[in-house]
Length: 492
Image (cartoon, rainbow, N blue to C red; front, side, top):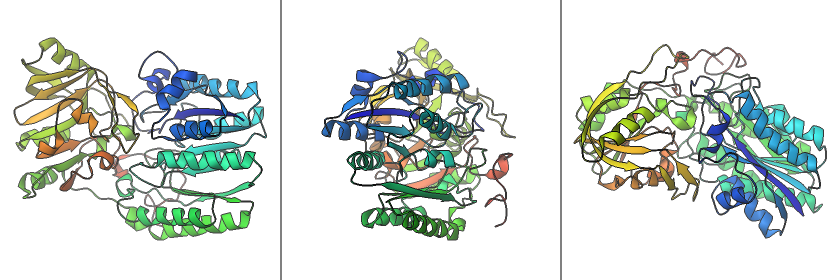
């Protein structure tokens, strides 16, 4: 058996000013990751590609892996990057001789020229190879288009947010393709969407309504579906099909797939008001944290500037309020400011530095902006930014936050990084010598993924509405291309 495996993942925030060139997909340096290097990098890791590799090796299959490309969410993918990376995949497809193809994609990739990056890739793949079974794993935040489903044999999605079952979703796709190759099953799919843009801050599977919606998907998979996926969608993308969708795959029974699809969509639509999120004033949120009598770490979320949703990671409003209200024994992860990092490195460990932190990247899609924050602190630590995840999310995967420093104001330890990195793993702090269990306040630029690593530590969670392109206030974003009417932009 010969299997083609590939990964090309990006969640595009069309409101984000952060560019997405070719190099962003390969932050560890050295150009595209492919072949044996990709196998070594992703074997034994907790993502869908890791599952593909495991299943292929269990089947004693020959593996061709032309590229493993993954970038933190940001603005539209540059056309050159899209052309170069998809070209690696399509050139490999053109070589032929494969029994199956497994693609680890995201499902919400927008390029400078395309609203549906994944669907276009699959369409072009089918123009080269119309017949080889193709398995596709998508993120729960996929914005689904017809071309994605039309040109795949099976589509699988995650059932958890934070995404701690990426491996299982990949394994599900790989097993369906293996059974298809063996002639045991004949997959058919049904998909559809609802005109709704669920707020990301209400999409977590630790709570309702998504907890029950995903449980229903899993029940279908336990009984009769080969795969049943409800994608909550990524709303910070001004494209026609942004929003919630469902795809169900069965063994040869299209009517049954359609029935399960419709039931899942109807359940989601009935729960649409539960997906609404409203924030409170920032000063009030931080004041609640300061007044809390809870013992143990309090987690404060700077959720409007989450780099895993396309945030700049350099807005300073939440940090400024934490400093203004004099929160003590706190850690802030993180501000992305390469210039400030270099200034601190030049100052040296143990020395005092005063610098302008963050607020350097304009956000023209918003009517508000962030300003640099003057901070005086001691340079406590200098770090190269390389660490592996403890898990459960992306277990074993290597991260690179670039040159990193810890600035200590005496009350707040501020982690400053040179490359975007969401704090979803405990090792983002332990790698810089910070024990989160000893902190009164843990301030994270995250929405929901932080729960994967820090959820068990948090004794209280306080959501802080700062400034950023990941805002859940749709009134601050101008939607021009999304289909209308759509809830909650319109009364439905």
